[in-house]
Image (tube, rainbow, N blue to C red; front, side):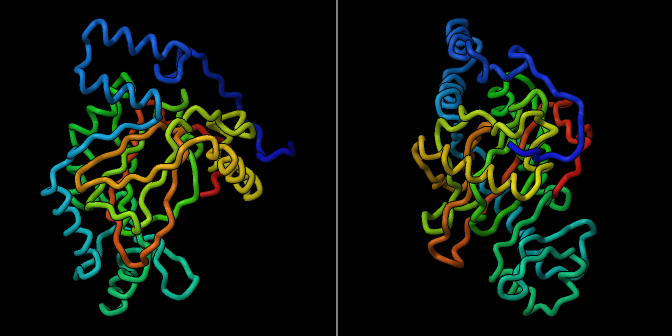
Length: 308
């Protein structure tokens, strides 16, 4: 295989005992020991069994509707605000056919109101880090029940590090979050997808492949976290996506038709993406979080050039 990464970097190594419990050879025995000793509640054991077998678990009615509604109101206010919010950007706007751009909130508010509302309706827009600008989003970002569930899954405390608000189906290509983040030891990473409305099958719901978390990291990422989707070139990205297309065929395909307030938690290696949007204009309101234990996000130590 030709060289896909341009700069030399220190070798990253990991011992088996440093991996999360669910990625070790004795994971089933670990879970059975927790069952025998009674250290976890039956509901937690059920979630962990699902996690170990399928690479995801679902917590129904995880967050209150009132907090979701307050966050959605704050999102709506972004488009009609009188004053710009510093540091806020709106991504994936479609000013013209085929054009994709991101605007600062100041740039957005400089447009006539009717143009803003047209962009809101015509674009699959998303906002990163809305918890910095909305108290309601911050309440979901810091929600105790979500954090507790992630900490139970990982077997150690974890904290949220990123958030994304989606209004419509993302149409994201299949990917694994581990390949996007720089976490070491690997897989101490949990994604959480919160349904902010009842999700319709035609809206482009979250698409995932139970059991695919067992697929090894792509061979070209042989010095992870230095080598990843964030440091590879376009050809390597295309080869990675082809690898996932082959790998996913061994697993069943599922979509998450969550009810408002439901949350799906997934392993960093679970293959997932956005299903096709069958009914354009139909919303798929969601709030996505990622959790990493303190000290394990190693992005600041990567020496290769980031491609985004």
